[in-house]
Image (cartoon, rainbow, N blue to C red; front, top):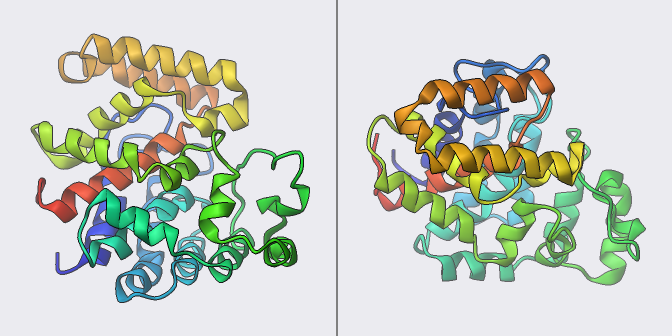
Length: 283
């Protein structure tokens, strides 16, 4: 792997190859309208945007280009949240894969970056929560139509994402120095076995740690709490290493119920990239 864009693309591929990842597409499970192959194609399509981030182009431009390429496959939104984490991480990697460097990257985002972020929503449907009561004009579901309000308020991309906290744990990473992404990277380094298989264990540990915010958005906080509690029970039993059947049953149950902890998968991809960039795991 020659550069951060290579490793970010590999992280996307390794994340979807991990199994079992309860509720998410993996190499053994498809969702009714979202298939393993869609994620492979999404990772390929996102490559030009990852390369822009590595080259030092504006974060918003790189993100919109990555999403535009990702969305060319027929499955729709495969890796929007993962790319929102990976693009600033790829940029930061040019100067060193540290949390302070990541914080510096997001601190330097601009209003133009925010405008590109909103345009990205025109390329693909994304499940998001409602905007703050005092900011309906900033609803990301408006896509480019919201850009005049963004410019009027002078909001950079980091400020826009702060509006999504605490309801969106991808946005939360932007305001906590990618706290959970770096913690996930440490967990990858601490585990043994094929990296794609480690992804399942790290994913379960993240789901056991906090309720998934995408599940909360789509199904309500009580469902998200139930999923989190079941994951915590399995993690406490060390079930991923000792009883993969129990985790596989959990995965099948969530797929059957249409419950997709997608934010947890996004964090897993980010952790993979950081670990690959630090060479604490190698392929």
